[in-house]
Image (tube, rainbow, N blue to C red; front, side, top):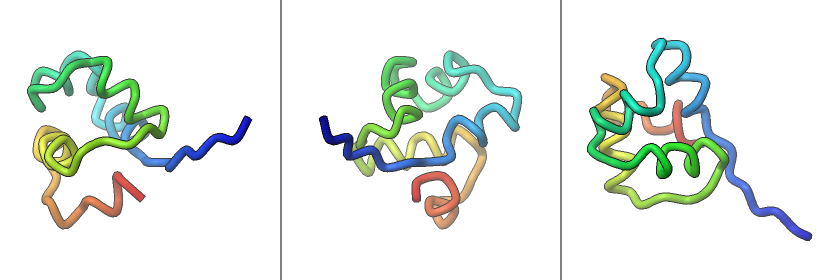
Length: 68
């Protein structure tokens, strides 16, 4: 079984802000399941990444800090 998982820092950044998955999902207007999938390294759309960055209070230019 080959896993093609792209690591990201979403979980670490979210937790450092003391933000729950539920809180982030509400702020970003996406489902908590989507947050979980992204934190597990599953791919997501560019629009979803944009929503997450803004919900975390980050700039779009900070994308490489969250999504490697």
